[in-house]
Length: 349
Image (cartoon, rainbow, N blue to C red):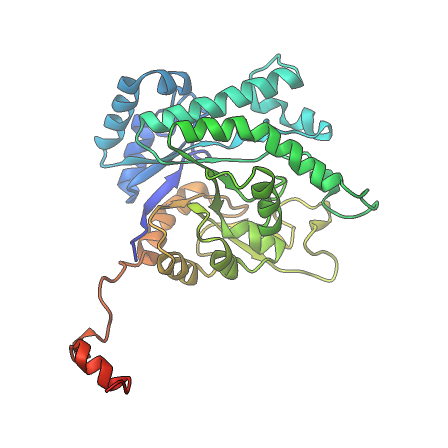
């Protein structure tokens, strides 16, 4: 067994124009002072990273690592969640997602830009010495996730075939750079649960670089068994977001939320320790199955401040990490049986 690394923190929800969140150096000091050992960097935020330079220059990447090392940190992973979303967008969502790309682009230009961005992230990851990368799959089928009106036969298969067609050149590029592409299994993406992940994996011809980012909070909101999920998919889990959530159905609203905002929804994200996720069991299962990647805090909460969530998150993760054993607890009772004695025990003599 191997030991999970951490705590690490995803910087996307903390980056800001105000200090200490407005530069990599200052936010790194802030994170280090809280007890974090690594940061996951959103590549769309120019305050934290220049993705073009990171893809072009190993020297720039060494300098970036040096900035973090000055504060006792390293890069856990890079993220292209926003760019990955634009690889596949149903027309119903184009207006809502247009802010994810530079202003003035039309839908096709945003798509071309996004694909280029994700490919650059593969090279940047290699230049930083990283083996895994985080992204979203995007979605062509999300308007049809509920089977009413009745979906025509073949729609889902065609949708996943097209999604795979868009991602295969990107996956091949990641393969050339020795990096796994970990899709966050997330509501609003075509890859939103185990079954839909399998559909995509099959549609890509079981591409070796298709992996997943495991985040149990999204499964609480779907009422999916997030612990058994690990047993099914541990071989694909290349990244781990530590994010909490709760689901409290009422007589008026359930999984779909009744169009309410986050505070009123039965299912809502919470700061770590304030929700219902059984992190102790999650860390045990991941350790049992040999996960040795980072445990990365992703803070989202509709009640608690991000600063408090970050402070508490480092402490929680540090407590959950299990130092994987290298010996059996009953080794002291090993009687040292020889081959001849084995035969006797088996009744072969």
